[in-house]
Length: 294
Image 1: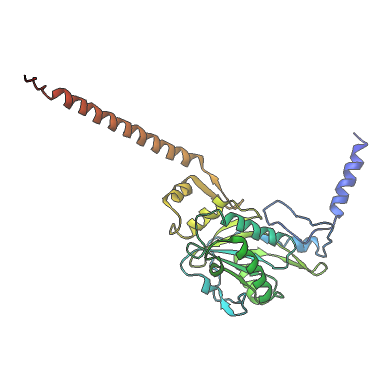
Image 2 (image 1 turned 30 degrees about the vertical axis):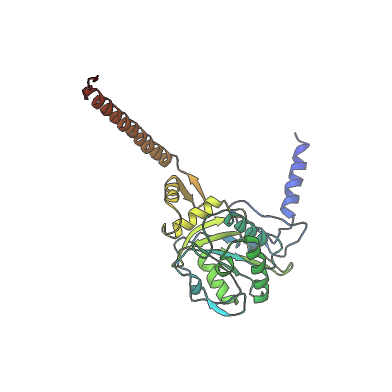
């Protein structure tokens, strides 16, 4: 046992001294994601600033100026036209996490019956003020092709902006990141924010892999049930949004209630059918038989 202690202590010291990566996965309490042996020039104190706070119910400043993928001056308010909006904060030259996050979003949206443009819009904003509309246009072309859904080109917007606009937006939604000058990359969280048609934060979905059910239910809730089906309302009764994980979890008590109601309804239906059959049989017995004629 004594011989093991120095080895364990050495491993702990080595891990403590290992360089941090400039990539951060944004899932609460899950730590860092590394990429190769890439060193990072940010300090542990700076890394502590990287976070994804859930500022639920906060109004996003919709008058902020940005530029769209064609280089036109726009405001966020142009993209809030009566339907919920998925806000994706990335930077277009990110070597790993942002790509995975956008890939995960496309994978989830492609299997939904909800249609882009009709039921929701997507706004992707680069938090790197050095990036250009040309980079945004290239990224848009890539992901519109990946989606392969009608209306995607008009419903998915890729924006760039100056430092002031970016900071006001990211601070409002609780998205905190740090620039690593040594690697010329950002340490940042990952996830999507679902906004109401009025531009208020409704739900946060963390990580890089998003369950289609979580995205669908978040959109239905953000729209105040104006998109989706009655079945979605039933699911929202049985599933509860957990802010700690950014996912929907099954609520056992609600499931039992729904099961109880369905059971009572089924029994009531059977009793009704049996009563009708009994009445029909009694009516048949009461009908006098007609004597046969020669």
